[in-house]
Length: 474
Image (cartoon, rainbow, N blue to C red):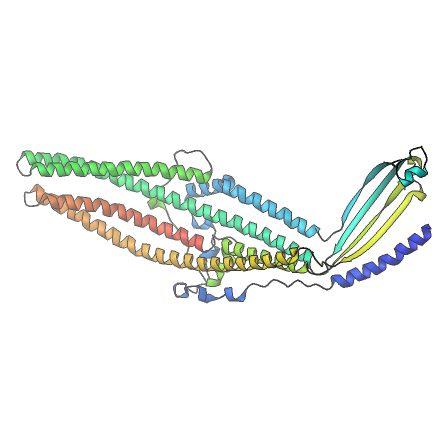
């Protein structure tokens, strides 16, 4: 009996293995290809893109930002920012699924001891045969089970590829979070320095207007000016003090936001000055298609589409039969003393080819949903590319505009400064209208504040261009 079982097993297994190898070659899943209609320069405003091979898209933040305090804050944020930590955990989860997808090619194995107790009812045919004595059967066993599904139609491979794509998407999303964080920290840092400079200007203006108020009162006592001029000088002083209060509040709020980016409690932030900032990186941005290889959000969108593509392949494979090979073996005996004898050995081997027929439309529904999800992922991918092109174009235009604006605002401030000095001299000599002094002083303060805004705007435009080109990740 044992020899017949062995012969049967040995005759079945080779045939099953041969069938398995032949069927595995019938790979039905389509290979992924990047959509050709999305890799096209017509999505970009190439008239604004210099054809320079040196690209800011390859510049790391460590090369772009030279302020020692700023780089220290960026390092600190990358280590402890909560959004970064969340992205890392999402990446770890995706990596676990990726490993599971790769492991699906291997068989499942299980082994362990077992004890089974059975007694029959006396009111059944088997129980009546035993008379009034109830039968008690205890069976001991040690067994192992193995099961393996052949990847005939590429379902397992497609699921594995989908998991890999999802892991790569999580990596790109992690880079995107870091790019956003670095840009936010740099921009906020520059805003704080801009507010510092505006505060310094306002404090100097307050001191000047306090002196001017004393001069105005003296001229009024001398009969050169009226009480109206005195009241206007007092109003100007109150206006500048109000601006200082607003600036102080803005600085504190901006510091609190900066601390949130660093994931630390609210506290004062040490910083350098706006005039100390030097960005020496060339702003040539290279060919437009570099956006596809440098921007993390574009990479994440493509990996999302790739994931949906492979899941569609896996769903389609569900329409076809699945080949499963299973085997079990071990030791069984009703007497524990004989459990480890040769006579207790047993083995079974099974091969099944299962074709779905009626399953309440579940397979077709899954396939149609996967097709819709793939189209949604494609639309998201395309929209991300269009947004990337817009971001680069916007950043370039903003940088060009800020370059020109700085010159104009500096010149405007100079003109108002001169006008204020001339108007004050005329009034002091009894030849001018004090309204001209008021107007010139107001315009001078606003122009100087606007000049500081323009200097910050240039730095902010560089940050936006850096972010739009992908953040320098390689």
